[in-house]
Length: 232
Image 1 (spheres, rainbow, N blue to C red):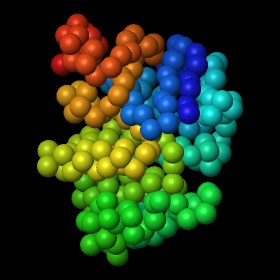
Image 2: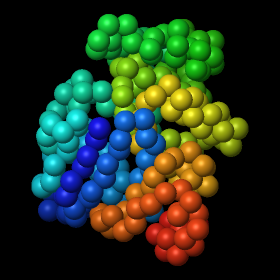
Image 3: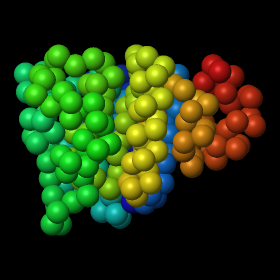
Image 4: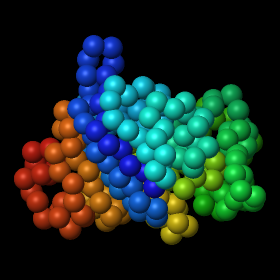
């Protein structure tokens, strides 16, 4: 479904990525792991056309979308939950959700009703402005907003960063439900134990290069990878 091949990217003269390879199959959950500053968010920005790659290819269903604008990536069924949530602060919860609603092939599975079913708290606060929500509620809204595009792949950059433990557990539970609905997921997060229970495969990057890939069982059985590259 998604294949990134030999991706290189830079900010001005400072090169950040040096040949990233990454793939996500339909219905699969994959993590992108690494310490801060190793290139995870740069990879996501390159995928969504927010940063033009220097080299490499970004293939969606086999078609090259390298450097395509963000709206074309979204139209191909890739939804983004960005780092920092970035909800529209002066729109209500419901307006935030409606703003991104997309039904590409007739009625999609993700509607206001189904998003509210996944996140009942959003329904309770549907008339509140985005800037009146707690951090956890904003993250729920950011996920719901991405789902309203009816994506086949949901990309989450720092899925539970800065959230209270109970809210984190709620987010992971909702992501598991999204997986059961058939969406593929590519997720960045720092909770390696949670990710190992959640995802099928893991890609570890260090200084803009892929240094390890493998299954959850392999990750948990390899203390060297966790200690050297993830500091856990």
